[in-house]
Length: 473
Image 1 (cartoon, rainbow, N blue to C red):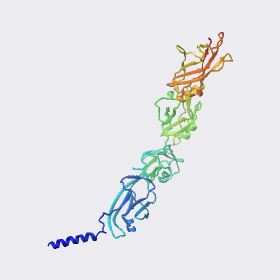
Image 2 (image 1 turned 60 degrees about the horizontal axis):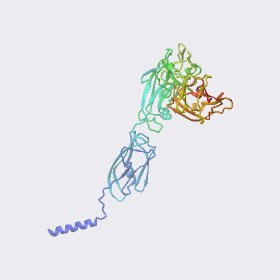
Image 3 (image 1 turned 135 degrees about the horizontal axis):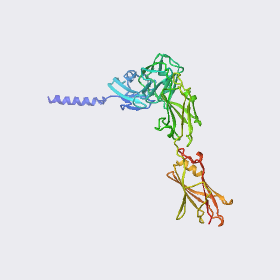
Image 4 (image 1 turned 90 degrees about the horizontal axis):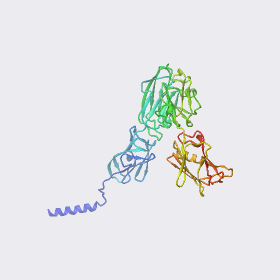
């Protein structure tokens, strides 16, 4: 019995020595991508790497790439032990793909093993593509013969993909326009929808964002056409925020210098007819556009002018989308609520005292003591604040001139400092005392008008403000 055990041990030793070339390492494959739910660049090659050279045709049959639409086609190529797969066509952003490599792998050295790899991933960014938020009219709604179909999306849309994927039945020649955001599209009949007809529309799931992310969902809707015989009316004209084209909450008499004008009608009107029917005195030049159903905006090219009364007129030639004209012309006058800029006071500051004046544009010269330095420090207070840019422009326009006698030189400005946009401190040098019997006279001028004294919010001095100083000893 002992000899048997000894012989078995020897046999086992010989077996172990004889099997030095047999590997008990677990065989498997490495795939890329390997991280689940990874976000990959658009131009990629997927790959599978084997522990040694495999039987290539059978290895390729174990590889699949799928999306929610089904299996993705592509081309294989090899580099030694690594198998690459290039999707054709290129993968689409926002779609969840799944790489799978499953089945029995046979290597050229005769070894075989089972692989089971599955890795989901995205290209470009995760999540779905753009979605349809609303349609106007809603599904099953009724529209006038000229009213457009308006679609609003959750993200900007590639206009070319929209044109490919939109199907409108019965077929009609249309005008398609997008808003500046690329999220809202208007589909209007070139002439008119057919009265009493029912139209259906479909947007295919391959409509995409500008980066190629597909919508992934098909949308459908329908609407019925019924001719409108009611004349439109003007409900209101109110100031609007220029950047958002939403109402400010004020009436026209409280419009600001930079406000737009919002026209609200009882129903949608043709923008081109409103453009030709609108006039104002004085003329307000600008851009007229449709904001939403029944609402148009005029964005002035320039500012509304302080103290200017405007009269707005809309002729009865304005048409709704069915061709009905405004019942009666509309007229409205208003004056923008822009405060007039005023100088509250001008103060001369000396070493130990000061003088302040609030009455200007008189020939009464204000005596100011001047020492040998020839320095005059003035502080000017305004009713309305200046922006930094407009405050600097006013400083460059203010003058302090030698007035009498003719030989008196003009002083030079040494410094200018604004405090809170309301108070301007000016320091001038080069003033002279003058002769005892007459003295020297200087004239300070703050120019009026929007060009020189606009404060950045539409307020300006209506006329020049000036003040005389005398420096007699």
